Length: 147
View: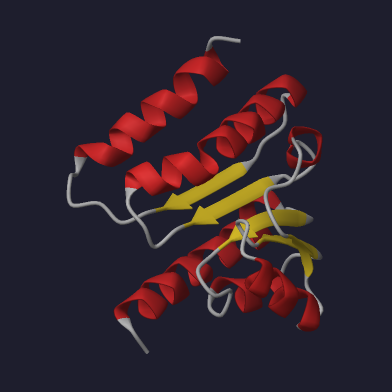
């Protein structure tokens, strides 16, 4: 397997344990490149996984063929709030991650805060600048905490 698949498998192990043991989540919103590493691990421990194909119609059709619950783009803000966990894993840089997922992640965080319910947000992107994660977290948390 590639280094990317190895990384995703490591994340899958921890995420499945977290969702099963700590949170007891009954569902997770997921995007991962290819849906070959994390999705199978989550399907073993979480009753519902909504796969986000990120606007890729070929991937969307493949997910449906595999019997997955899927959306071609991103779910609506109302739908996002129903999921106790969100995993948005991207093999692109922080700018691409932000363009694709920032508004969805912010809506998810806002819904968790409004409902005063626990949740798990896992995100991944490629970055050569170590400050990229901190910058993204500030952008996501500042508006959510300010509400």
